[in-house]
Image (cartoon, rainbow, N blue to C red):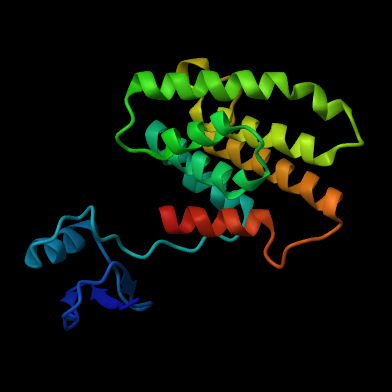
Length: 202
């Protein structure tokens, strides 16, 4: 990926290929005004380019970042966490629900239908959590629960944890069940992948 540097006083020479990432010089200070001017100078929307965000490396930073998101942004980030473990899902309705949650064009009616579908399957598979003989069935449930967390309408949310964080926790539970079943771990943990997913999304 081609990178450009944006300083407090302006930007460096521009590449011929419009980059998608701004690499902020460690010794410079970037302001929103300068960034907007940079985009205006290039005839580009601020939605197509964003300053380099600090890399998320722990749960505290992840939760802080999530707290700053709007409800739609949290839904999509939470759905991204669910998608990361979607290979453990056994039901096509949950897969479609996650796809709907990620869709920026989804209507309110479609989001509500997706929530109800994921919720119904999560409720149906809840009893699997009491069985220690089928870890993949438990993983299946937690994937659905992750989708439900991402899709839960703000007016139905309970507790202090936000949607994206709840989705992240449920996705980790799903992965833990898979690891118990297969007796294998990944070189990159689920939490680390979530930090990367959030850093890229933000």
